Length: 269
Image (cartoon, rainbow, N blue to C red; front, side, top):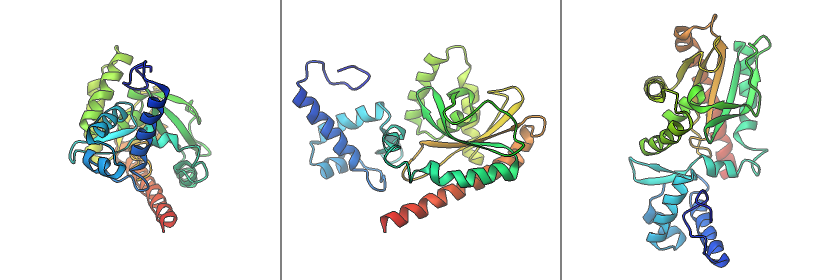
């Protein structure tokens, strides 16, 4: 089997491959429906798999982005790649649908561009883009791919990761962007997220555009989605982005998260 898909040898028999796949899927299902954090011991008990097998599977699934390791509790939870698998099945209920109305109202009220994005490899993919009537013509639309370390949303996503996961992604980015000084920008974003829950970039994507971003914390998509908005730099210098746009964006995020929690409770009742 190709190394990008796992650590199992090429000579593995088809029946063994199916068994490994089934075990991996059983492990992922153990986090449903609330994506509660689980330890290897808990997963072994829930799936009736040997703990050594569970440890190998969680290590592989974490490396591939399907699980996230939580350093503070030594547990795992579903990560962005696992959430992405359900996008099609949840197309009528997912965060994009539930966020769209809030995003468009926010864009209209504040005359700006607001984006919902998810990380894919070394880019942030724009899943939903809403514009105010007179908003600036930044070259972004649904499906646009923004270089992760140069976008406010990418930096916010990085800042939301657990330290071990962040270090691993940073190593990937250093290989992909060898000429970019990644550490200063990403460290600054992490400090801003820790203090204010949002980060600001100045002309990082386009010279006349400033951006603000914050990760969305939703039980069904932990760390998967990031909310960002872009404004003209001449009207909103960095200081005004920090004082005005950042708090407004946090309010939008809170409304989206509250809607998701309500919807989740209704489905689970």
